[in-house]
Amino acid sequence: MLIKIKDSSSLRDGDVTDENIYSDRRRFIKTSVKYTATGVLASYGVLPIISSNDSCASIDFSSIKETSYKVKDKLTSLKSVTSYNNFYELGSGKKDPKLNAHLLKTEPWSITVEGHCNKPGIYALEDFISPSVLEERIYRLRCVEAWSMVIPWVGIEANKILKKFEPNSNAKFVEFESIYDPENLPGQERRVLEWPYTEGLRIDEAMHPLTIFAVGLYGKELPNQNGAPLRLVVPWKYGFKSIKSIVKIRFINTQATSAWNLSAPSEYGFYSNVNPDVDHPRWSQKKERRIGDFLKRKTMPFNGYADQVAQLYQGMNLKKHF
Ligand SMILES: Nc1nc2c(c(=O)[nH]1)N[C@H]1C(S)=C(S)[C@@H](COP(=O)(O)O)O[C@H]1N2
Ligand SMILES: [Mo]
Image 1 (cartoon, helix red, strand yellow):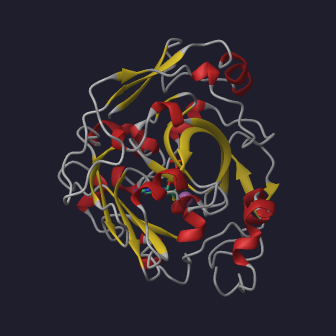
Image 2: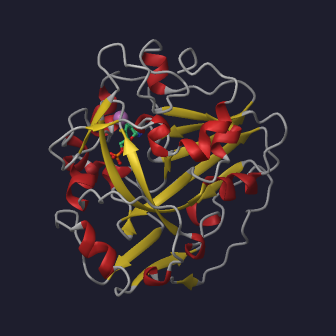
């Protein structure tokens, strides 16, 4: 992992961080991101997007600008966020990703950018993410399995990164690919899904200001089980669209592949916007269980982000294009 988020309060995955304590404390703790640029690993004859040097820069997490991207809901505890996961490469049980997290090798890490853009290449993470651009986003995450969480991510708007690769007018969709490492990742020994895990968005969805790349949560480096070192977060869509541990970004002309859509197209649509009115063929989506809560709550259209994103789907029949 190339971007290190150090937290002087030494929070560990196992620590129960009360959501309210966290939000108070983050104003006081000094957290730094150590950032070392090693430069582009290789490229198809293009220069790195951000000129690299050997300097280290730190940012103070306590001074991240107040973001308007937050929700009033109570945060899900750090413990739940990091020990109740879906990450099939690390096993299909909810506890497997944390247990097997050490098997995911995040160093070295490179990201291949391909397709309809002017700046394809193989990049190191720090070629396009500098700590000074990171911000906190508190988002709801709604899994298609009808549970949900509220997670304080640390990340950057996806459009800020994607634009640097200069996609051209043929880039109608963006496809992402996760790590493929069957020798180390126990879930990839079997074909539970088509490996590598893929996901995609229409280009306007990818460029929407709510879509982020996350490199951290709860003010520190992203735990492996949450998709280190870089994962997508698309808060108005079911969780499976938020692809983890990204190694490839491809600008394409036709609808992107999606691992779950490939495996069961009648159950998991390409769009997969959170929608209480479109049930999963095997269960209702009307309600959801917020992890940590006793009573179920109503599912909100677009997971509560309708004001910001509904216009992306004007004129579309969302029951058909689910
Ligand atoms: N590569 C990869 N990405 C993935 C998954 C996966 O199995 N593999 N699971 C998805 C699903 S179903 C959900 S709900 C979210 C869960 O994210 P979290 O474990 O950080 O809460 O990750 C998504 N991203
Ligand atoms: Mo999910």
